[in-house]
Length: 288
Image 1: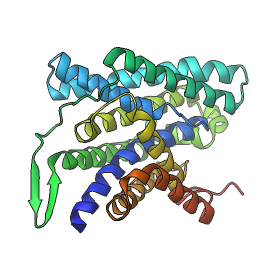
Image 2: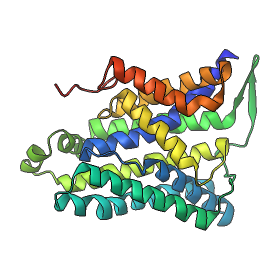
Image 3: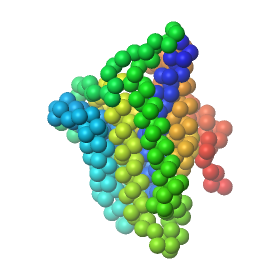
């Protein structure tokens, strides 16, 4: 039973971490909260449904289609919602409102295109269940954890071992100095949007076989991803991973011993407790 709770918590924590990672990437590069991040996940899952069920594409081809499509959507948002407003000197509040507007647009478009009813999408593995003692583990949970570990490792390697990744980190840390050193700061911002879109799209592809897919899934998981990023420290991608896992594990425990009906409420309670103790988040840097 305990093992099953831990696996369930880590599985959902990995989903929250991938969405939270997207929040952290965009915030690092632009200092803005992308509240359309949850819709990236929803659209990624919907595109994967279209690829595997409607177009009958192989799983890998459909996965790549989802990642590329949502990455392009993220670039479109940066081009239409962020760059024009930034050039006109708009406040961060107005940019956040623009993100929220796109979130509502994507949700309603998804209802028009795919309908309001939950859809079932194909997982990487068949829906097998493994028995370990008194615990039952879904094979799709292995896929979720594996996808999160591989994607986070690749992103870590990109940021710490490649010149382009280190340039992106530098432009996020000090855009003016990076520009003086010859770094294309706008290109770095676009790259962060591409990576954030791909990360959430991957989360949508792997979570679909577990929780089904509808136009509403983006809101709930987007909120949890935001909480994960804030708990870990909004400027820290590693903090988003820690925050996601912590949130997933606590939710799993509380869901078993209290009720799953309070999972969203508990996410915010945990967020408030962490921020009360450490306002900048677990790995965040204080502004003072």
